[in-house]
Length: 161
Image (cartoon, rainbow, N blue to C red; front, side, top):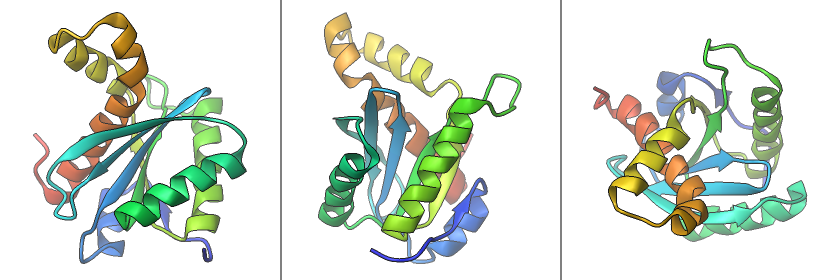
């Protein structure tokens, strides 16, 4: 689609790259699946989307490009799996590499968002909805992406607690 775009850990930098707002797509990268979530153009509500099977990057890119086009996505929020002490290990390095590859192909600004506790929070929410273990397993990744995205848009709009 274009040349590499901004990749940042800073919500302020990311927000500055999107002065008009716009729909955002969040990704929770797993080894077997990619959870997705989107938000409205006004950055108020994150909504869980599809959970995609993760495969070779080309196949992932094709599925993500379809979502970007369909939803008119203006930026990406990618979960960054930091260790509990805040350091970054191999999974975080892999997520950064994935972000670089996406940036080169999609030319959209990317916000790397600390995803510690996102899956735990999503699991708690789904249990609170009295969802069966099987259904939780099917939906956990997309709900974790929604938790990641809601945290990011709260920071972007100053609504964070």
